[in-house]
Structure formats: C-alpha cells, structure tokens
Length: 266
Length: 165
Image (tube, rainbow over all chains, first blue to last red; front, side, top):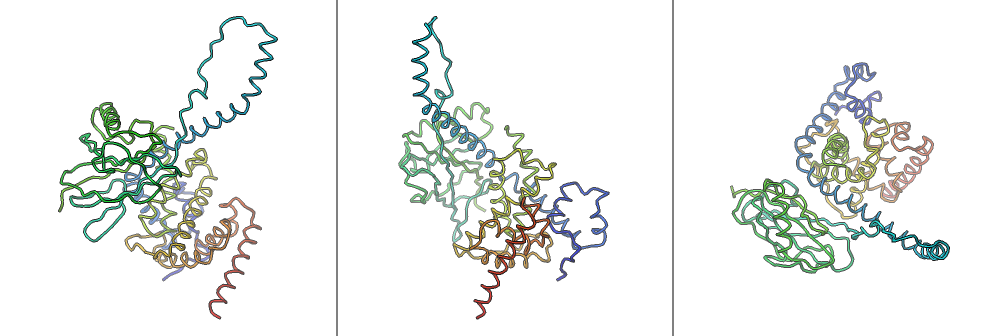
C-alpha cells in the first residue's frame, strides 16, 4: 500500500480546495498533477458528494425539515417561557408601579391592551422521536425514512420521549390515500399512557396494500382520540389537494414521523 | 427559515459533513444518520453555515469530528462490534481500512481524555494534520495543541507499556 508523502495535502486541505471549486491558479494543482493518490482522494470526495446528492439528501431531507421545524417551535416555546418567567419576576414591581401611577395620575379613559406575548403562550414542546424496527424473516433492521418494506414484514415501535411524566401517546399510520389507522394501541380509538422510551409491546404485520405510508408518533399531556387525528389529517390532505401525505399533523401535539413505501412481496 | 432556504443550506453543508462522517465512521448508513444529526445541530448556529466564509469549514470539521468521536465512544461503551462497510470507497481508499483500525485503536485510548484532547489526537494520528492546521480548525493556539498532544502521547505510551508488561 502506498502511503501519503509528507508533501501531500491532508484531507482538510483537499476539502477546502474542492469546496473552492478547484481554482485553476491554486498552488495545489501542481501537486495533484504529480500525485495519483491525491487525485484519487479528490475523486472519492466527489463520489461521496454524489452519494450525498443521490441517496442521502433525498432520503433524509423531509426528516431534517420536520425536525428543524419542531426545533424552531421548541425554541419559540422556550423564548415564550422565558418571557413568561421575566413577566412573573417583574409583575410585583409592575403592580407596585401601577399603584403609584394610579395614585398620582388620574385616569383619562378606558385603557385597551393588545394581547401580549405572555397571553399568546401556548406551552413548551418536548423532544420526541420514533424508532421503528422491521423483522423480515430472520433479519431485523431499523426502518429509515424512504425505505421499502413488503407484505408480512413485522414492525415494532420504540417511542423516544424526553418527558419524565406519563404522557398520552398514539402511533398512527397515514397512507397516501388518506387512510388513517392506529398501530398503537392497535386499532384503538384513543391515546394511551406511554411510560418512557421503551419498546412498545407487540408488533404490526404489514398487509398486502402497497404505496407510501407515514407513521406518526403523537404525544400529549392531555388525552386525545383517533377521531381528532383523522379530522386533522383530512384537513391537511384537503389543503394539499389530496396529493401528499402531510409531514406533520396539524394538531397541538408533539410528534415525530417516518415515511416508507410498501411493495408487494417479491 | 423556509423549506427552500433549509434545502439550500443542507445541499451545501451536507456533503462536507457526510464526507467527513464517512471518513471517520467508515459506514454509509452510520454516516447518513450522523449527517442529519450534525446538520441539525449546526443549524442552531445557521449564520455560521456559510461555506463562502473561510471560518465555516474548520467549524464544520470541529462539530463533525466531535460528534463522530462521541459515536466511537458510545460504540466502545456498548462493546459494539466494529463493522466495515466494504461497499464504501472512502477517500484515500487504499488507506481506508488502515484508517478505520487506527480510529478504532485511538478511540479506545481516547476514552479518558477531554473532548479537546480527543479531537487533537484524532486530527494528528488519523488525519495527519499539522499542529498549525489543527489550531486553525479548533480555534485554539498551536501551543495548546502541542500541550494536549504531549499529554495524550504520554498517557497512551503508559497504557501501551502496561499492556505489554
């Protein structure tokens, strides 16, 4: 095996060179013209980039977008909570100031207040995730966004929840045709208490229907029903003209999801 | 940030993260998973995600390296078996397997060290970077790099002596 020569640029430098679009006046060009190993390294950079574009990006972007959206809502929730805390801390001072103000300044008329940021606070969301494991004959593997599964594959679910308290949860499947059904509790009509991030009992065996399907883990401090979920899914699908499965169910619930495609058994 | 902007950022920073993950993890599936996570973490500081800025690449290297080192640490603590995905043609492909073995060995030695020392040892012994390059990537002085590296080498040598005794 041929090793890198001391004069060979390290991968960090090659990365910077590749990122800069291989400038024609770059001092590294002379070395690359002479060194097959570094040319090969550069070629494999490009191969990895193609792999990202062709495989990684398409299979992960929806999940990234969904989680990024959730994070933004989390950080907004935290910001609101901070506002709430600050408001709580200054409230006694503000009340005292208001008393002084009222005593010193006669009221001139009704004082209408716009809804404040504090009024708009709706609750902080936690972090949730969903792991799905597929058993196919003797093999078990983790389901990834965009994977293909087939009839008779069995799915097991592991909800990932950060809450230390018991919370209500439900795993719901939404098909491209808008069919919404509960996988946990199986065929149930209302959310059940989840106790931490542990594998849920039992598994769901895929039937022969084909097409795209998205699994959602939905959690909330308050009970909710499958009926609520179906209504929200229908609304979201109507808004998209029934063209696509929503990436997020428009309900005030914490949620995580994963999409896969079902194909007929080979 | 709208979906279009997010897509643009992911398309530009994602390949850099992914390439680095492939090099350090040696497994396409693990690299794919790690890329998502690292990008989401980087997104918290999305103003830094501008690859035309010369500070961006060192920063992405740093974030990605730290994340991958944590994966190695967790593999170690779980006693997970190292699996080398033979379908992956890693950069400097002739050296890929050697690199994975080097990472595996270094990861075992790195466990007791702080995050900074772990990264410095990896940049030195796996990436072959100079102390100047490491200082640039990590945003620390060259002197700090040298000090941490010496501490790592002393301890690693001691451990190796203990194993051969």
